[in-house]
Length: 446
Image 1 (cartoon, one colour):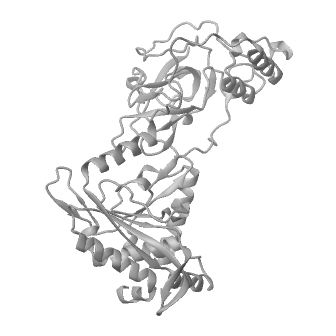
Image 2 (tube, helix red, strand yellow):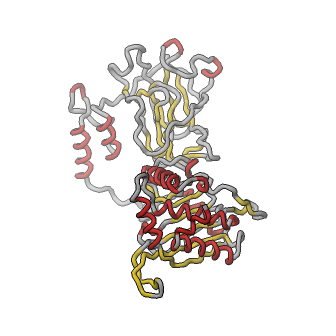
Image 3 (cartoon, rainbow, N blue to C red):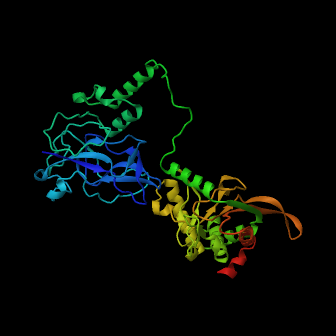
């Protein structure tokens, strides 16, 4: 006789108290393996696939896509075979643990939005279970909207099984809002085919539109959730708490670009402009260490950081994120370039981990990639400073006492006025501009 196990949302770390359901990866009635990912959730830090420690038949899912689930709240219930049935129940060997519905949770596996490469999904039905073990007995399923008390084994009732030719057809029905239980399949033994779903979709389109409801959602309102909500809260706090000021200067980057071309003409990894700017930042912060700092939570002191954990703004498919290069001051220019490239690619694919998005002490913001010259950005709380770099573009410039066409960029520096005065900020920015214009100056500092 099967036993129904309840799997709750585990502690996702970083002090997080909940997560938003992004995508369910299993259906009610589906047979899952131990540690198979069942749901993809978004926290304030990253997107995470959550594996279930039980193998058996999914009898219920809690929470719709887009709904917030608290840590410790039920995610799914799974009907697993009893100890004598031979199913892989991780708690079956312990009488104490089998008496509880909230079992010890296994570690999470993987981050990001990649499709699961876990065990192949199986449905309840003929040949659904492996030959080495009998299929779990079907259990009556429901779609509860609130957590239930631990479920004791009960006599099985008639299962709700919808015969569908493939998961792709089930997915099509879900995306188009088609109720599979209301369809009569045209395949063998009533099997629902893709054509059946498409006919149902066409019938919905042809049906007259329902009367407009009395109250409708306001046009254009997009709820703040997950990562976007966390970013909004952090920027609002920064703007509210930090007395920030910005200064800027134009710099002739012709020699810096020539140095990059020279470096990339030799064998070895290519050096990006961002890597050169990161190297300039670490040298400048060694000269002005008070800018690699943050103000304490209560505002009573300033924390000076010995290591430079360099954050940089990167645009990913989920929006703007700030990955962090750890111990940037201890890396060579090539090593900085390799780590910047790795983190940038992870940002684009949405696979950055929470650890790679936290702990920065200074931010480099290369908004020139968006084709703009200047900006007055909001500081990445609790950091005290940020260097902004505009596009590098050919402009008329006085060079050597004559008018010439040079590659020019605008540098901006935003800082927390509590950690330094304008003289320190101006000195930092002027030093950075001098290194951009005369990159040979870096040799004195290395």
